[in-house]
Amino acid sequence: MIRTRFGRASRMLAGVLVAAAFASTVAASRAAFHTTVVKSEPRTGDSVKVAPKIIKLWFSEPPKTGTLEVKLATAAGSAVKLGPVKPDTTVKGDNPPLMVDVQGPMAPGTYRVNWNAIAPDGDASKGNFSFKLLPSKP
Image (tube, rainbow, N blue to C red; front, side, top):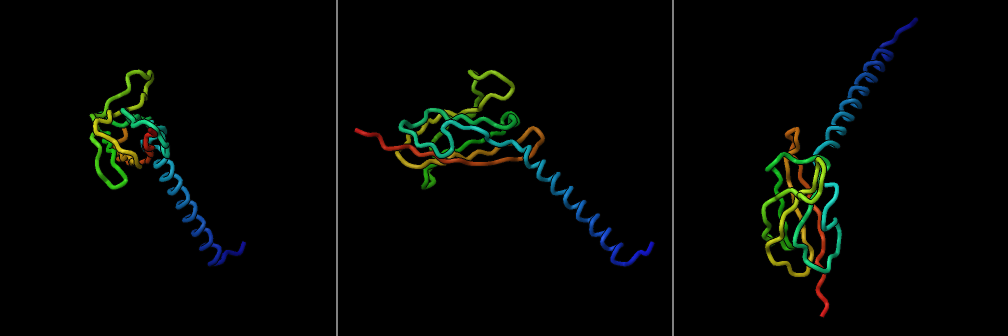
């Protein structure tokens, strides 16, 4: 069998490509397991007629206890006061939603919910979503 310089180089290149593909697959699968919001109330993009009294967040996996921080702000960036994060005790199971009471006033407009948390494996996660409070009709 005749071996050439290019054959060896091709095999080396193939090995490097396989290793790179494996590394990117592992990184992507790790990223897929970060704690993230899978459902919320209000929902992403909702237009609501009544200001929510509670914001609920369902996570792909429960964040470490005491690590979830939730903030609510107007489109202009003004903060709306929220109560402490607490579990929704009306929902049974291993991963009930977490919720915060909305304690500040809300005028019609667009609102953004920002959250950050620490996953059980110690990785930090964060995200946001928006909803709109419609003007009340007389």
